[in-house]
Length: 434
Image (cartoon, rainbow, N blue to C red; front, side, top):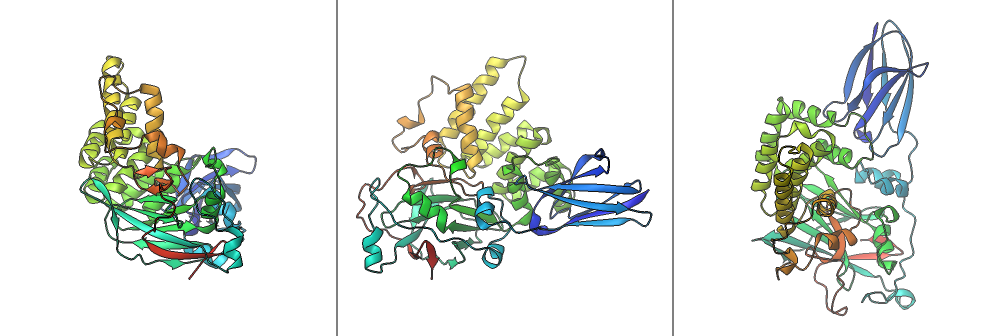
């Protein structure tokens, strides 16, 4: 027997590693997940030749071959040949914006616009007068139960194909990059304890503005933005949550709980809820998908109570109830789920795109209590969950949609000639410029 050290470069993000002997048989049945909280593991195996297959959240695989001898061996997974930025953005599993700017290039895109749903024609006349089309970064903050426009100037920096804004406070805000008519992608920025960066992509913006109708599915869209979490471990949780498949993904949470709080899952969830509520929502999503038994129904109820304006918490509670079931009283369970869904619809925002999808799916499965008034009857609410889904855009897992404000998804400006207030950002030849 000999020791095999397995390590992964942090640029890869979470990596699920499976070990095979030369004949193709699995040498170690449980996949090993490497992350920032567990970057290296040592396993003891019989001497021989092994193939190690690392699976990234994108589904891409890296294969390493090693000859394990008596003195041991080591395998280091590192990024291979760089893919294009377009492939990277289509998979929407980024590591850092600095990598994009330094190692990748974005092809120029045609920025000609057409008259469509109230959007202003720029096109060839703009090119004729050497005019640079303007966009505006706008910010809203959630104050006293409503979204309020923020008039403060926004500091940003321009990279190769993107414009980036950084936040380090714990305010709940929405950020939009809108055209001269006040229409564009709106991103809800969760108020994580350590903050987050938001980047808008030039080609994704241009594609959306040139399209008369939104693409039928998100698979047909280019990402318009992404939120990069300052906390690397939580960023890996978000990557794992959005992964099509990640064997052994539940290890990401257990590794985080052990490394950060040195305790079991139950106590770690309580500590996380008291310390960083948006992170608790994110981890609740993760556990509900990969291992719902690690969090109790009581904890999900506490989460919903602690965040009364956040629809994510009520949606997660509904799905937790559905996952646990109530075989002795199915009618009562059904009514409890309907109550949660009705509560979720009345809440003014969601932090993560997955929540909106789960809400619409649950409503189709369980419906709403018939004796309840529809949230659409509330004059303060001008939207439904379907409006957000229909206008959704890709932003790496956080809630994002096309529209004119955080509470008007899919709406176009009533007055296309109205002056847009915000921090101006210039685009030229499909690229952001200083």
